[in-house]
Image (cartoon, rainbow over all chains, first blue to last red):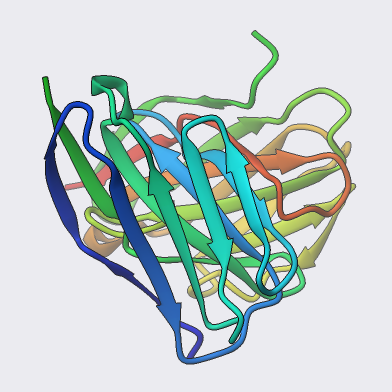
Length: 110
Length: 113
C-alpha cells in the first residue's frame, strides 16, 4: 500500500541545533504535507508542497518535495524548546484520503 | 476561538456499549474529515464529508462505525458494540472546500474497558 516511512523515529537535540527529518514512500505522491502535533492537541499544518522539486519555507522551517515524488524532507534551523512535538508527513492516497507517517518525535534540550 | 471543537474530550465506556463523538467544524468550512489515531501512530483516515453527504467512507473499519452530518455543519461519529481495539484518539478536521490543508480539532480520547 501507500505507506509513508518517517525517519528518524525520534531525535534528542540541543537548543540551537539544526534538525533534519525525512519521509519516503514506495509510491508516488503528488502532494506532501508536514504537520506538527503537541500532546493533547490535533496536528497543525506547517507546510504544504505541491510540485516535485519545490522548496518551501515557513520561518525556521524548510521543506522539500523530492524530485522522484517519493520523498520529502523537513529541516528546522536553530531549534528552540517550543519546537518539541511529533512531526508527521502526510500525502493524499486518492481524493481526500490522507495518509500519515508514524511521526518523528523531537525533543529539544535547553 | 473559532477552531474545530470536539466533545467529549475523553470518553470511557465498557465493551459492547454504544458511543457518539461530536465534531463542530470551523464556521463556513464545507468539508469535514474523521481520523483515528492509535498510540505511537499517525492519524488514519476514516471518512470525509462534503456538505451533508459522505463523499468517501472507505476508511471506516467495519459496519459498527457510522458518521452523519445532517445539516452540513456538526458531525457525529457513532460506534456500536464497542471493542477494546476501538480505543484511540478520534480526530476531526475541516477545510474550506475539499482541500489537503485541513484544520484539526484536539480529538476525543476513547477508552473501551
